[in-house]
Image 1 (cartoon, helix red, strand yellow):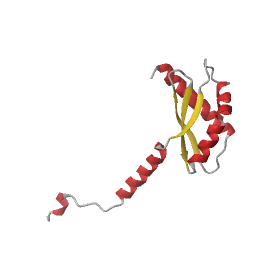
Image 2: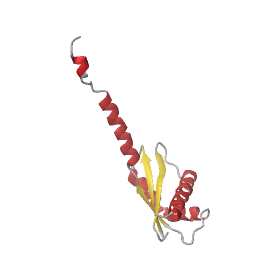
Image 3: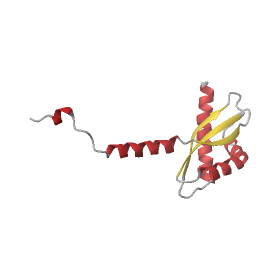
Image 4: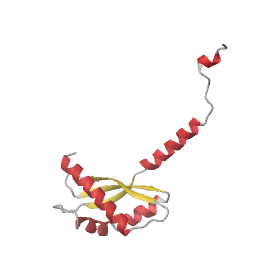
Length: 122
């Protein structure tokens, strides 16, 4: 990936996050833009959303239905030759991370075997 694509990805991630924070509300749920991947021709952008504490499909459906409105608000602040078409997708890495931490805490509570030095009488 080129440096220009990396810069545009980060710029789009920040601006899409700002638009979603300003225009959308999901009570009791944490919805964030985790990453944006723009194609080499800058015509399409996949927006990876991290969604915790709620049902994923309704949120993604709403965002994909409103993608044109979100695009127009973002492109008022980001000037590119072509306006990329946004498609919102679920990024489950945060939920997997939470599951992994919970699993590690559960493993930590399991009684541990004694070290070989502790097994031998003094």
